[in-house]
Length: 193
Ligand SMILES: CC(C)(COP(=O)(O)OP(=O)(O)OC[C@H]1O[C@@H](n2cnc3c(N)ncnc32)[C@H](O)[C@@H]1OP(=O)(O)O)[C@@H](O)C(=O)NCCC(=O)NCCS
Image 1 (cartoon, rainbow, N blue to C red):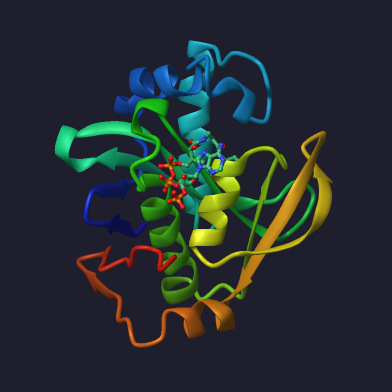
Image 2: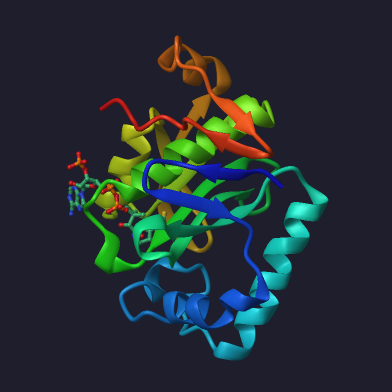
């Protein structure tokens, strides 16, 4: 698994040492509505969730990273790639603790994951969905270059569906070079606009 280093974030694999911190995130009252089960997350499910995230990484060359805010050495959320419900399309997904919102960190994480998807794994296309009223998530999609395609229905919700192709990503990021250093992707670029 490739780790990712951005100016303010480290994206690394989840481990069972993250159980308590991840439970605090997934059971945060302001975040429950963004999780697909729409129910409070029980502590006993956290270990199973980490196990599943780690197994996905072993099965595919992509998955969900633990997002660590380097300055505080704190796990603040997740960001990564997963299959979109009932499809083989690959979805960009992100979630951060509310106390870290509004500082550009969602965009920084999402942008670095797209770098990984297109530059390291060479995927063809990445999609993302959000409830129409989730303007912060839609704005993150736009800032990393994704384009609205259509209204859709996933995970029992009406959503807006965005996508970006590898060609569009490369055109947008032309001239910028990503490097890998001992398995860590560095130089992941902040979004342009
Ligand atoms: C989506 C999420 C990761 C964004 O994280 P973040 O670190 O705050 O994101 P950023 O600071 O990089 O960018 C947020 C953008 O949304 C904008 N925004 C936030 N709330 C907004 C609102 N109500 N209306 C319009 N724009 C809004 C911000 O102004 C910013 O845009 P700007 O840079 O042009 O000013 C965070 O809000 C989150 O974890 N939400 C809950 C989980 C979630 O929604 N996940 C996606 C599920 S589809």
